[in-house]
Length: 118
Length: 114
Image (tube, rainbow over the protein chains, first blue to last red):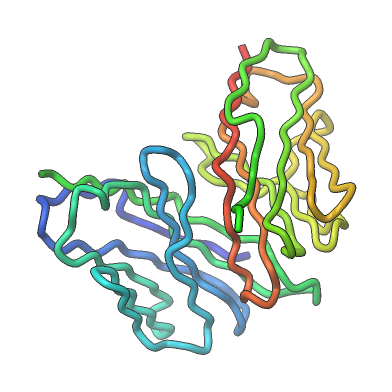
């Protein structure tokens, strides 16, 4: 069975500090996808990034960056120069292929609540 | 393009009443997912459809829950009869295989069963 662990339940940092959110996953599959979603106080779930298991290149998008390491089964998310608008709950998720039906269900971590203090 | 649309956004009902949640996926997407989010259990997948066919309903908590997808642009999740423990936020999401499984979520329906 697949599993996603976000050990950090809550993190608070002062605005402009860098912060890293940890995600560790477990899967027996060799083909899978990893995701990060953001859930701001308004409640919607916003897609941030997708990574497939064959692509270990790190990715940077503005102040956001992601570090994928298969050797440690981790997919960590770093926010540089944090801003108050980054305050949200962040979820890491894992999707496995299976049964030939294509789109498969996501297994979510429990989320990390990030608070940016002005 | 419009994202995933869910209605109603908020629902307050009394125990024993029937509740119907609605979802319109993103046009062209071929998979649809229903999730439930609670403080205790986090985000749980209830059921998902591929090309309007239910593929996995193992997350549906019990027979009081049912879901249908009569066509590619509409799905319902029904709870009958509702119970206070069903209070949660229910999300619908859709995806397209060609987009490598990325699921896009609707705004959710916040359900309160009194």
